[in-house]
Image (tube, rainbow, N blue to C red; front, side, top):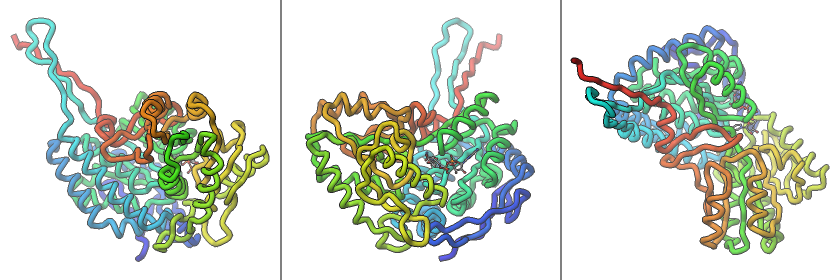
Amino acid sequence: MSYPNLALHVSGQWLRSASGGERPVVNPADESVLAALPLAGVDELAAAAESARRGFAQWRKQTALQRCDTLKRAAQLMRERAPLIAGVLTMEQGKPSAEALREVTLSADIIDFQAEEAKRLYGRTVPPRVAGILSQTVSRVPVGPVAAFTPWNFPANLPARKIGSALAAGCSVVIKPAEETPGTCMAIVQAFLDAGVPADALNLVCGEPALVSRTLIAHEAIRKASFTGSVVVGQQLGAQCASLVKRFTSELGGHAPVIVCEDADLDHVLKLAVPAKFRNAGQVCASPIRFIVQRRHHAAFVQRFTEAARALRLGPGNDPRTQMGPLTHARRLADLQHFIDDALDQGATLHCGGRRAPRPGWYFEPTVITGAPPASRVMRDEPFGPIALIQPFDTLDEAIAQANALPYGLGAYAFTRGLDSAHRLGEEIEAGMVGINHFGVSQPETPFGGVRHSGIGSEMGAEGLLAYTDVKLVVVGASS
Ligand code: NAD
C-alpha cells in the first residue's frame, strides 16, 4: 500500500502547500522518505483559528443526539477504513501492524463512547432560597474552539481522544498532530468530515511546534488547549494558558512502577509484563518501567524477564513475524544510549540489549538493567523506550516508598494475591491509574490521566467529555 499525499485542513480546504515550507516524513523502519509535509505559517494558523470560531457557531447548534449520530458515523467509517489507516500508521510510526490495527479500532471505540456521553451531559435544577425565583438551572456548555496537540507514539488514539471528546461536547477543534506522524491524523479528520462534521469545526495544522502552539493559544478565538507530550513542553503551554486564563488539560508521561509481591504468581506476571513493557517499543506514557520485585522472586524475575526480552523479534511493523518495531524518530536513539551509559557508569548491570540494533532503521534492542542507582538519569526521567529497570524490595512499605519516590504519577501496577495488600497498594500508590494484577488501565470507558508532574485532568470516560465543558448557571426570576 502507498503512503498518502500530505495536506493541512484549514477553513474547509485541504492545503497541499503552506507558507511555513515543508519537511519530510520518514519511515523509521528503513529511513526512507515517505512524503513531504506542508508546514503552516502564522497566516494559516490564524485562518485555522478563525475557521474554528465559525465551526463552533455552527456545531454547537446541533442537538446532543445529532452530534452523537454524526460521531458514531465517524467511528464506523474509521472501522471500515481501519486496515488502510493502520497501514499508514505503521509506515510513519513503526509499530507492528496488529498493534496499529488494534489502536485504530480502539480509537473508533473511544469516539463511540464519547458520542454516547454527549447524550448524558446532564445538568441540574437547584431549589431557590428566596421567593420570586422560578428556576435555577446548572448546565454544562462547550468551552469553545479548542487547540489540541498530540505526539507521535499513538497517532490514532490520542487525536481520537481529543477530537472525539471536544466534538461530542459541542466544541470545534484545531488539531496539531506530531510532524513525524501526520498521515494517520489526516485519515481520522477525513472520517469525521465524511461523517458530516462541518468543515470549519475541524482544522488540522502542522508546523514548527512552538510557533503553532504559541500562535494558536494566543489567538482570541481559542478557548482551551489540550496537550500530550513531555513535562517541559506541558509546563510551557500550561504557563501560556494560565497567563491568558484559558483552560488547559495535559498528559505528560510517567515513570510507571510495577510492584511484584512474593505472593504473586510469577508465570502470570511475566506473561503480562513482557508484552506490556515492549509494546510500541516502550514508547508509551503508562509503560511499565521500574519493576520493584520482592527479594524472593528477584533473581528468577531478572533471569526470565531477560530471556523473554532477548527472544523478541525486531523488525519492520508490516512483517507479521515482528514483535517489536523501530523507535519513531532518530533523536530517541542517542537519548536512550545516554540513559543507559549513564546508569552503567554509575554501577548498574546490563542484562541484555543496551544499544542500537545493528541494522538499517531506528531499532533499539530490548534492554534490561538492574542496580541502577536512584541518582542515575534513567531512574529519574522517563526513558520512553524499550528499557526495563528491575530492583529488589523487602517490605511493602519500602516498595510503596520506591513507587512514590518520583514526581510522576500516571500509571502504576502491582501484582499480589493478598486482598489486604491489593487494597493497600491501590490506596497508597500515588498515581492517576493503578492496575492491580493487570496492565489494562487505558480503556474508552475509564478516565486516563495523571497526578503531580504527569499532568492535569483526564481523557476518556465521562471525565473526558467534561474537560471540554464549562459550568453555567441560569437563574430565572418572576417577570413581575
Ligand atoms: P516533545 O515534548 O518535544 O514532543 C512531544 C510532542 O509534542 C511532539 O508531537 C511535538 O511535536 C510536540 N511539541 C513539542 N514542542 C511543542 C510545543 N512547543 N508546542 C506544541 N507541541 C509541541 O517530546 P519528544 O522529544 O518528541 O519526546 C521526548 C519525551 O517526551 C519523551 O521521552 C517522553 O518523555 C515525552 N513524550 C510523552 C508522550 C506521552 O504520551 N505523554 C508522548 C511523546 C513524548
